Structures are given as C-alpha cells and as structure tokens.
Image 1: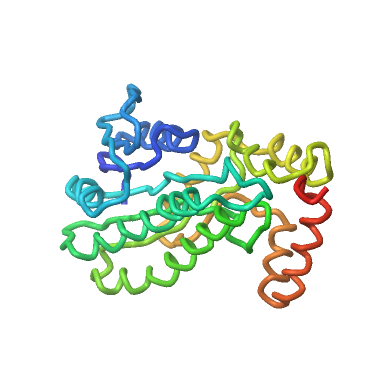
Image 2: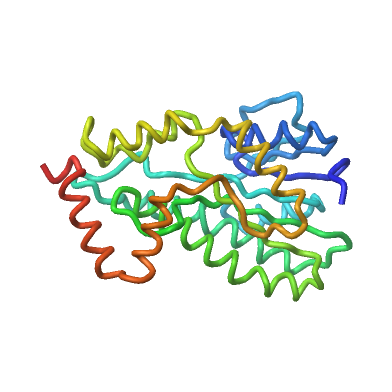
Length: 265
C-alpha cells in the first residue's frame, strides 16, 4: 500500500524522534498531525498540532476522530529525577507508566470501539530496554516491558476482532543521539565503569533522522509486526539470563548496584 496522502498522527512530536518521523512522512506526501502536551511548536511539515495531556478518553477520541491511517505513539518519559537513595519517586512512577504504557493501551482499546473502513496501523514506540528489569532505570524499563507484553499479547485479538483492519505494531529503538540519552546515568558513579559504558553508547548512538529512515523502511514491510534498531549482544544475554535464571539475574542486579551505583558508596 502506498504511503502517499496518508494521514499520520504522531504523539511526542516535539521530541528528537517525533520530529524526524514527522519530516520523513511529510516527504512522502502524508498529512502529518502532531500531538504534544505543549502548544509551543511549529514546523513547515506539520499539518496540524493537537495539544493534550494524553490521559483521558476524551483525548483518545480527539485522535481517533481524525480518522487517521497511521498512529505512531511516540510520546515517552524517562526517570530524570530520583529520591535520596536512588529510589523512584511516586509522582514519576504514575506519570511514566501513564504516558509510556497506559496511554498507548487506551488508544488501542479505543480503536476497537469503532468501525474502520480502511486499515489502521497503531505503532507503539517501545525500547530495547524492554529486555529485562534494571536497577538503574526500574520505572522506565518496567513501563516498556509492560507495553511490549500488552502490544504483542493483545495485537492478535485486535487484528482478528477488527476483521484485519487494525494492526498493533511495535518498534523498539535504542539510544538516540540527544541530551536525553544521558538520563540513565543519574544513578551511576560518575566516571565509573557503568558511566563509561553509557558514554560509549551515547557516542555511537544514531541520529533521529537515521532511526526515522530505518523505521520507515520497516513500516513499509506489510509482514513486519515487531522491529527496531539493532540490539547489543549484552542486552540479548541479559534477557536470556532473566528469562532462564531469574534468581541469578536478581543477584546480578544487587551486585551491579553495589559496584556501580553512586548511592552505595
């Protein structure tokens, strides 16, 4: 199916990836509608900006009322503030889970209450951080794990229930070159081994434009349901340990926290 003249809705439009995705779809002739919690954004490639908190059924209806062909749920939040011992803050647990997990699920479930006369792709932007839990990003990791589980678990139900009109698809990028790529170091010893590993990852991270181009190629493949940027072998190894030896994984997390956390010194 050709992409030209499609109506594409992108949440988190003001972010690095959101803007890159908007530009890429605009190049194809699509009408790009951005969604943001801020109304302070303009771009020549943007057809319309919707300002909303993304936390209510009314917000879901505003997006679905547009009758889009593609919805890219790109808005997200990470843990930039933490407690005195490195623990998550209650208000951030609530907001991160809402925007990273609950909101995409609400949009997906809302779509099933409508009859669609054309195919609708609802694409959630996940993360390769959904491979396993992490003491250095517990809320972010858990929100992305929950998103991945819901999307791949509920997706077949939605697809069959909508007579193949609705497709829940998942794209899992890693770090993207930006200031936010440094956020996970807030629990690490500055200059320590973990901090240096993150520094290398940030230095090697692709730009938003590179990820958007990769995303677009994946998007055009009708048989691609789950995809994403390359996953490091270290992530794959951790996922295997977490899945097969959860008790060992937990002890590894305790050891890593003791060695690399700036709160254990």
